[in-house]
Image (spheres, rainbow, N blue to C red):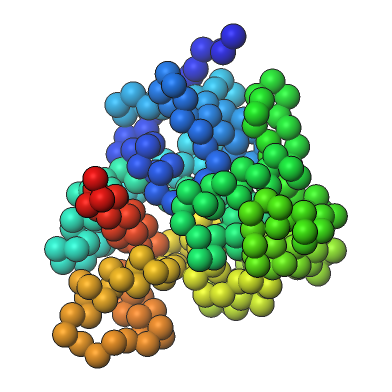
Length: 283
């Protein structure tokens, strides 16, 4: 029998939009409403009713931190540019928050994301958890995300069997560097953004897009602006019409100037809005 849930205040927050926005990939929607998943190794259920979340007792502070309920969204929204594209994304994604994810889980998940859609990334994440993670007692079928040490013991063929394809070699090599102590992800917290970006880009399979995802969703560097295929299209369509096609460096410079210290929030809103618009067009 499920335990009664405990309430926590969650003003200016949309749980569904946040969990469906392509930041994190393992949460499962339950039939009676709400979601179940893991925050690190801690299982919890989360259900929203208006401006409150109902969560598994004992996880209140953890849930509030994970969903960044302390972020000042009013100030973040005020920093957004007033152009039509940004304001349309704001209207469509109101209440979406940047999740604070565990460093390794975040980095590893985005290493597997290269050239994959959200549904495929979720499939790979769940397969890795089930095959290499640890089951959570009493919460079947929840599994923790495998640690670097757990993945370091795997073979590339075993990772490929989880649907990773060419990404298997990169994930395995990165896991082994971290498990051996050659790389300390926590130490990157002390670095400035550019230095942390460079350090992440030195890992196998990590380029600027994946590194910026890790900085934004794992290290809470809210100015980070990952540019994937979706965001590239959005920038060209709405900000570079009738202009010479910009280089990647020019796009990064433009994003830093246009979206400022909360560029990561702007990026996530533009990204989620573009994806949901495309889904609606297909219906």
